Image (cartoon, rainbow, N blue to C red; front, side):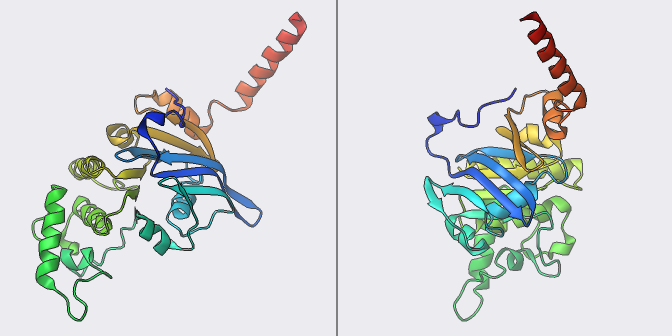
Length: 270
């Protein structure tokens, strides 16, 4: 079932709002008039075929790309991000598909990479305590924060990457294919983690090709096609609706011919 993206007045002001955002690379339009709202405690799934513009949109929100036109609002105020650090300062955290973890370092070192405690020396005790506190809040299944990341499963590594993004107390977290290449048990672990992040009141943007994962955690499903909005759906929307919006199956030469014939018949009746 398709829903109106603007029909959320009862939720107040969205954490993040994109209005008519466009991004061009030379003569190529990667994004055209994109609208997107994300509210506190809400999981918005961003789906679309390869080349639909999902990665470009995520990088634009993360500050890696500057929009060519349009406006981004954060907590109701217009913002302009010159780089990823501006997005982080606002409270927007991103976990990309490659996770960017150092496999030869332990969990604590990965969590605090680049933001180590202590002005002159590493405060190992404080970092370890904060690591356990954060992981316990997320009910993460990490055997020891002193285990090297190379020894962890795919789901546990994803957990470490998500936990690291939460250290700065963001208000929105973006997850790029967090369950890709994971087994059933590991996928369930990551989906449970997303639910717990949502319960903390954060807005979550989830990119995924797995419709089962999307239905399990998403509140709304936003479809991109060829760099444009192509519908906003509820998780209980039929596969036919979602696949049709993703692939454009509802807008092809056959359906356009049928529409022309109907128009011609209507004109003849008049």
